Amino acid sequence: MSLHQTPSLVRSLLLRLTVPLLFIVATTAALGGWWANRMAEQTFDKWLLDSARSLAQQVRFEGARARLILGGDAESILAFDTLDRTYYSVRQGGQLLAGHTDLPASTQEGDPLYFDASMQSQPVRVVRLTVPNFVEAHGEPAQVYIAETRLKREEVRRDIQLMLIPSGLLLLVTAGAIVAAVRGTLAPVEALANRWLAQSHHALDEVDLRHVPRELQPLASALNRLFARLRDVLARERRFTANAAHQIRTPLAGLQLGLSRAAQAPDLEAAQATIQELQTTTQRTARLVQQLLALSRLEPEATARLAWRTVDLCEVARDVGQAYLQTAMDRRLQFDLILPPHPVPVRAEPDLLSECLGNLVDNALRYAGSGKVVRIEVKPRGPSIQIDDAGPGIDPGQRATMLERFARGSSQGMEGSGLGLAIAQEIALLHGSPLELDRSDLSGLCVRLTFRPSTD
Image (cartoon, rainbow, N blue to C red; front, side):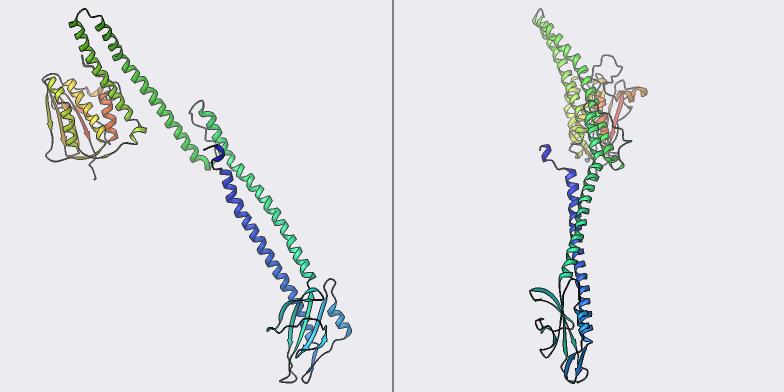
C-alpha cells in the first residue's frame, strides 16, 4: 500500500468534526429561519386580527339587518400603511354591506379564519371574523374581512434570510479553527515520529519523554519499550553469534588438522587412527551444533510460539532413557530408571522437555565414570524428575556458575561445550521452576526439576 493510499488521521478527524458541525449549523439555521418566519407570520396575523376586531366594533344591527358605521377618517386610518395596502369588506348572508367588492370571501369554517388569496394581481393575507347578532335572537351574523398585501412579510422574510449569512460565515470560521486545531494537535505526533525515525537510523536509544504530551505518553512509552526489546534481541543475537563462532572454531580447526594428518599418514593404520579421531570430533561438533540450535529455540521470540500440552512425565523419562541406553552400555555404566506405577501428567512442551532431560542424562553419563551408576527417577509428588550420578559432583559454591552458558567443570579429561546444564536450566525456567542442584545419595550430583501439576 502506497503512502497516498494509507488512511489519513487528519482527514479522518476533519470529517468526524466538520460533517457534524455542518449538519448542526445547517439544521440550526434552517430551524431558526423557519421559527423566525413563523413568529413573524403570527405577529402580522395578530395585527391583522386586531384590525378586524376594530372594524367589527363598528358593525351595528338594526333588527336582522347589519350596518357598518365608519366615518371617512376612520376608513383612512384603517387603510393607512407606509408599505402595504389594506382592504376590508363587511358581508351578511353573502351580500356585501360595505367595503371592497373584489375582496375574496371564504365559506370555510373557523373563527377567526386566516387564508391567502390574490387581489388586484397581488398576493394578500385575509382574516375573516364573525360578528354575532345580539339584537335579534335568530338574526344572521355578519362577517368582517380584512386583507393586507404581503410586502412587509416578504421584507421580513428577506431580513431573516440575510440573518443566515453570519451563520455561514461562522461555519467557515469554525471549520478553519477546527483544521488549525487538528493540525496543531497532531503536530506533536508527527514530530515524535520524525524524532524516532531520525534516531532509529543511527541507534535504538530511548527518546526523552519529558516534552511529549501527556496523551502521547502511553504510545511513547510503548515504543521505548519496543526499542528496549529490540536492543535486547540484538544484544542476544550478537552474544549468541560470538559464542557460537568461538565454540565452533575449535572443533573446525581440529577437523581441518585431522584431515591434514590423515592425508599425510604414512600407512593405512595411521590414517584409520586419525579418521577415528575425526569421527569423535565430528560427533562432538554435531552435539555442539545441536545444543546451539536448542539455545536459539529458547529465545523469547521463539518460545512465544511453543505448543504446550499435557504429557506423561513417565513416558518422556522412558523415551530419554532408551535413547541413552546404548551409550550407558558402551561406557559400562549401571543405568537405572525408576517410575511410579501410574502416569504423572505435567504441562510441558514435549520436544523441549526431552531436550532438557537429554542434556541432564548426557551430562551424568559423561561424569559418572566407568562402572558407576546413573539413575533417572520420576516422583509423582511435586511432580518432579530427578537424575542422580556417582560422579565427582559440583561444589556448592560453583553450582550457580555451572548453570550459566559455556561454563565448564574443573574435572580433568572431560570435554564439553558448557551448554548442557545452561540449556536445561533455561528449559526448566520455561516450565515454571529452576533446576535444583544437590548432593546425590550416589555421592555425585543430583539434578531435580519440579513441575506444576497439570489441571487438564
